[in-house]
Image (cartoon, rainbow, N blue to C red; front, side):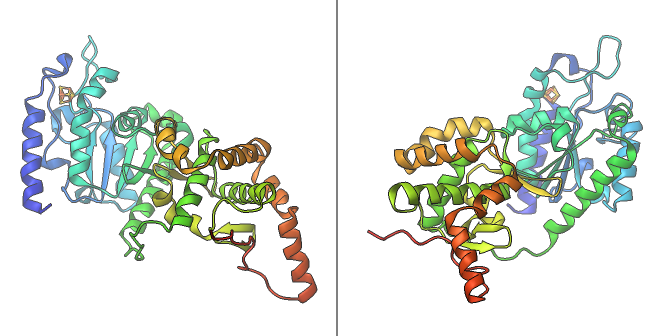
Length: 375
Ligand code: SF4
């Protein structure tokens, strides 16, 4: 979309917001959306809860004019993010007040009323990174595309959402500082700035072609494993469980489920087609986040249920499904360390290590599993 077309669409959006009367108690509040929110080509959008009575309701600029705005502006300034390069908005665009005229939390109905405006804004600006400020903003985003993120568990993590990166952060208001100190929030904003910097680096060319059939089948197996782990699992565990599933199939049926290439690496078997950068293409809807230095994966529960019949059933035979499910039942509860031990105790890995010792050859990156016979 050209810059002019974007600008026209934004004017139309702002006009509709200004005329909006969906929330009765917001009748006298300012509609806080306009050019002052930021450039329409901003790479980063901050989404807050609602305009504050002493801030944006008067200044007409989100996070400006009150204590929350002051904290927000200090935080971004200290990590080198300019307000002029980002877009700032709220889950609801008008200030909700209680019966005494004080700031109130927007109701679920008010958040739902305003969600289409948030969606339009995000689609128009099309940022690479969205940062939610507070639990209300994070929840509001789940109305646009379901996610299972919680502020407590997923603060300062990068998650794939609406084909962009979503980072949950705390609200910069004084009340939230009780739960997350200014120093801690500063670290969160440093993480945001670093994520933004990485997004801006020229990307390595990634093939947009469809995954090879072998990789696609592996994606279905991986998806089945993720469906069985509602709480998510580590990237490391996904590789090991896929390996154990392939091994179980080989032992039970004489052949593997897929022909994906699996090689030996330092931590054991590694599926080349399950490279982290390829996962969103391979497993539709997968959410990635970093947790304690580990890459974690999960499927939004709603997506897993809705898509199960459409995606898993026709692509995996009943016997393959039974194999994957039995592996999950047997090994799905193991920690990463236990999975590593289990994998290394398999006859395939023991044979490989024995061969390495006997020949003195370096079998790093050697194929670990035989290819299945082509019929
Ligand atoms: S909060 Fe949003 S939906 Fe509600 S009146 Fe304001 S602009 Fe309309």
